[in-house]
Length: 263
Image (cartoon, rainbow, N blue to C red):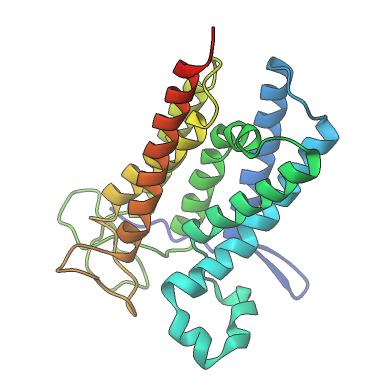
């Protein structure tokens, strides 16, 4: 299939170039806000709409800062040691989902303390709001022609302009479908009923880890890292293992605590 060569720059405002990838971040935050308002109106939650708007801003800061720090720490730490100021060169690209996740967790923990609420009350609320942003981000990767897949002879393989002449898996679209659309449907369905605390967060972590681990089999690893084991195990897989373990632990603990509560 022909890769649709879309200009990664959506539009320019004088010297300022607005990239589609940045617009996808904005789409994710706006979707989170609208979906969150819908959940708030359906359930009796102990925060106001203004406080929720602040929560989204705190989460957005966690995504951006954590994503950048995570990329530097997990994927390019040697380059950072050679040039520490490169940490702030965000215009060169380089964001990590796992780092962004840690940033959001920290932001929600701090904001929960500010509101005097249990952390997992906010985390479980945020879990079904997150996948749409993840899917939008993967679409941004596809438009930017980055994070492509491994070579394939399947009929939907695409030749990415910066990846040579071989057709490759459009792994960004696989991740958009799994981490964005399917994960959203699973979590949105799960959260329609009252669930034990920690379980929505646990389901998000475990299910994302499974989807991401699966796509890593057809996603090209970063050139400067390559495979960690053999010709298949990548850094993305490694980071998904503790994520899956933590998610399963939260699911088990959440349901066990619910069973032991007096009726």
